[in-house]
Image (cartoon, rainbow over all chains, first blue to last red):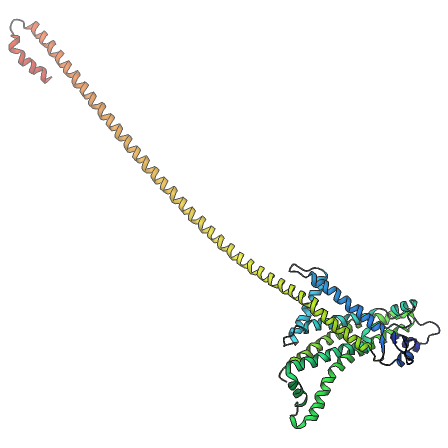
Length: 274
Length: 156
């Protein structure tokens, strides 16, 4: 809600600023009062809102799914149990379709990425001013509600995926096999540096593209919601409603793409023959 | 939009979530679903088997009923035959008995007739003898004509 003194630019910037807790240049730790202060903290800072919301959402997901798992029995499922099982079926089908190796970790990994990202993205559908305004009332200056509009969150996930890619590539192919795959393709050993450059870019592009794709989509969506919120309140619904409806598709689609790519990358890491 | 320690925090959080999911969420759900799938498959198979058994039992029952029916019909036919035989036999015995009784009666009657005739004959011959005696008292020697008279009475 842009109050009288606030300009549009300030409003947008306010909405795009994370609640940052970090080490000030003078050495003491505390919450940043402005975007500039947050920037000065550099790497030694936490986005409390991103961490908090993503943790709450992930914990919610695991709590409900673990409860469903505990109650799972051979009898006919009902209600939420049914919903959970249809998701499990959906993930299982995707993993079976794309992942040819044998690894009990891939399906839970896919499930976690999918549901967690769906939940984090869904925060985008909460009207942009509700939670930040509530936070201001509670004395918190900045609050960015959607964790996936923070590159820290998306890169955090993709780095996890990258570590898994490296781990399983070396485990399944052996260190020699993995290095060979990086250096001896596609042009044979006489073009080794060129091969390494190509394959290195290929390898690094996986986590970067994963993170940036999700971040870019969600950030752009959020930005449009913020821009719509700048309009007079009586006309906002005419744009925010269609955009929100369209955004539901993006929310699910981005989560699905992320999950599918994770499965595919895991499959590539497990493949012995290149 | 600064990259900072949040990155590492998110990575650790992600790893923990995945581990939790892998330990407590995925396996029990998948196991329960697989078990249910198996139970349903078994149930369907059992139902199919039961259906076949039912059809077989029905067929057996029908066969049994059919054979019982024919048996019953045979028994009834046999009983009929036997009854007829018995009736015929009874009829035969009865008529035999009747014949016997008839023959007996007839012979008795014949004897009575013969007896009566003989008596009549004797009486007639005595009467004749008396008549003749009274008529021919003097001329006929009763002793001489007695043979002739008895012959006469015999031929009557």
